[in-house]
Length: 192
Image 1 (cartoon, rainbow, N blue to C red):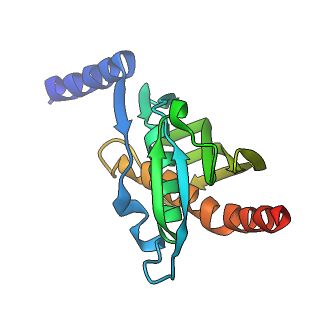
Image 2: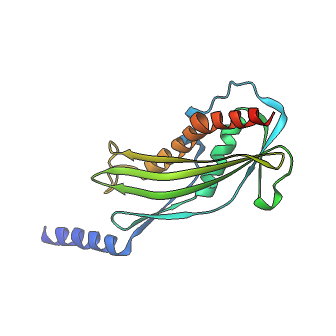
Image 3: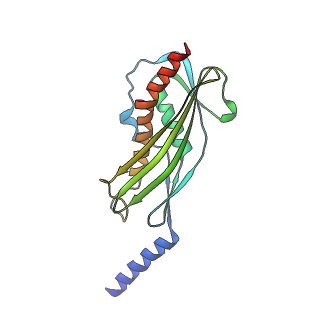
């Protein structure tokens, strides 16, 4: 019994010293329930979304490092959001931004991302969205999220590390649907 207890304690010490890494990536399943596929779509206009591949590292308790594929997550969520309303939604590299039509650029800044056994998951981040219409900036706004999932207890094998990633997906989609959409419509009306 002493050997088992000693081995367990040694394992925990090694875990805290060596650290663990967990990669989070885009997963469409997390936002499927938020997507409305029954809307009439605009067919004569195209939306271009600028893609990038930035990765943010964020350290949580117990030497756990999350490698968050922020470029992929925010870009694909933006694409799914716009596909609800437009027939033509394309992704382009920053070097291939067109000068005509609606262009969306996003940046995601994760200030704090933590998963602890005692407090659950916490995510504090800012999503900046820039909208260009015919090469003219019509909207540049930052949306901030400070969310704690104290009801979800993670770590030590009690739950799934994908839960904070799912929270991140849903909150980004929520920004697009409940805040950005209204701001974009106002900016487009002001353009007329």
